[in-house]
Image (cartoon, rainbow, N blue to C red; front, side, top):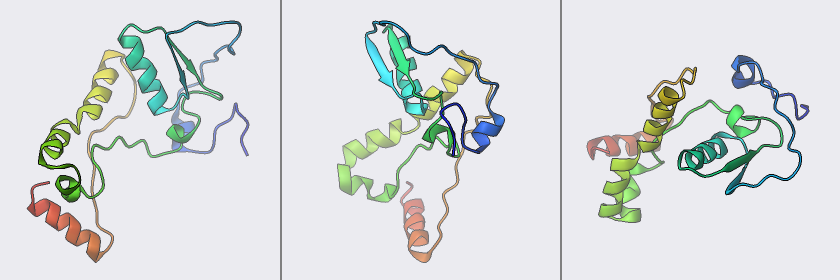
Length: 147
């Protein structure tokens, strides 16, 4: 079991930089936006709003990256399961838009790593594998369709 100041045994916890102590929230604070949760999405949301001139308060019960964001493999994948079905689900125009914009999140991550000189092991890339015949057929079909 972990306490709020400890972290689960994970690669993130083992390789994270020394923790910078932060004071507990005290007194009244005013902000344009309060973001609750200091995981990947919460931090990205708070940073985006701050970059757009908003006065942002980010509240995390434990510490940044303490929850699911600090316990996963750190993938930032640009895609979705069953891409070959996308046109059927959303229509050709929307599917084309999604295909054009699907990597923008990864672009933003790379831009912020450079802009804020973030020391990390970011590598862009992914592998999609099939574990059974059905998945293999689906992937083969997507490949043949140019997805």
